Length: 254
Ligand code: PGA
Image (cartoon, rainbow, N blue to C red; front, side, top):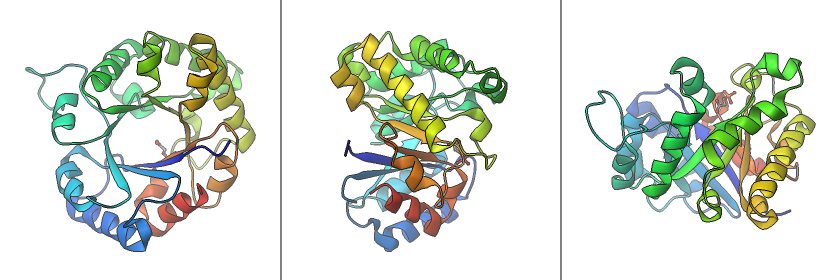
């Protein structure tokens, strides 16, 4: 399958705006002035960076994502950012349901469903994260666990809606730990997710949905992960904060 690959960088709560500008300028100078053939590059900086970086990435290969959005459109929700604000600022993607949001901010499959609905309504592409914690993997119950996450947050969508979603499988035990899933573990879960998507929708739709792997992706392991038939790219945390390493990961997707 020589499908389009996606490499997304999740900066989490790192870098000042000035440092973010330096990182993006570094990536553009390294070779992201123009589209990278067959690979889409997305960066998810902190929300405060988005407008400044949006100007900087014009006419480059880089697209922008927010790391989160509210499950409401507007109102008295101090500190929140809504998806219609993102759409108004021409931000094309939003990460929804990252495990850090689920764990530290108690986001549930049901509230994430509302976020996915709003993102689609406002034309912002959701990058929907799923993935099991360590104890679930030890019990070998990861398939069921991930199934529930996608069933409860995504399976109410129509065929047309689901085909606009990007899924990121990020096993919690692999995030920021240096413990990457093996290419075989990643492939097995991605194939499983695709099989369930095909059961709920059609095989064509399931095959077209990008499924990214996330969890300690780095320049050394990216190629073996991205070479798996059901791995359509990566969601990269720590290694996206370094120009050279992130650029090598983008190269590994080609
Ligand atoms: P990591 O983070 O690459 O630092 O493990 C991945 C993520 O949380 O998206």
